[in-house]
Length: 93
Image (tube, rainbow, N blue to C red; front, top):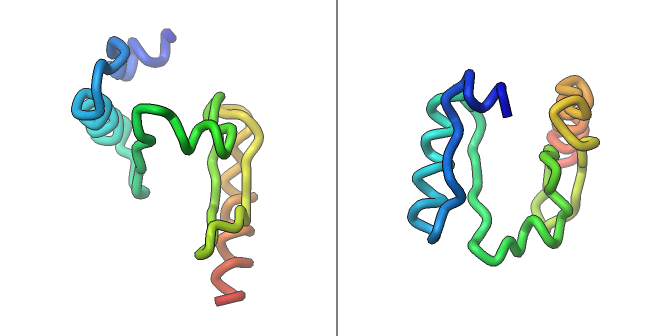
């Protein structure tokens, strides 16, 4: 929570999809996220299907096959593992 305060990304829980989109947009901008960010719908269908909580990073291939799933973040994120998976997937296309 302290890092959220420090990074100024502390928000109340969104009440609808428009607020959820607004919060996600603010986080992407304030945290300088350089890759595409997707927003789950309000029933959390993706989170339920992929167990995205706590934070995880996924690489999903065309057709929906999971090519990489990190351990829970932020300490489970290892960029070199994701890089290896990206190279493997790029070589298979």
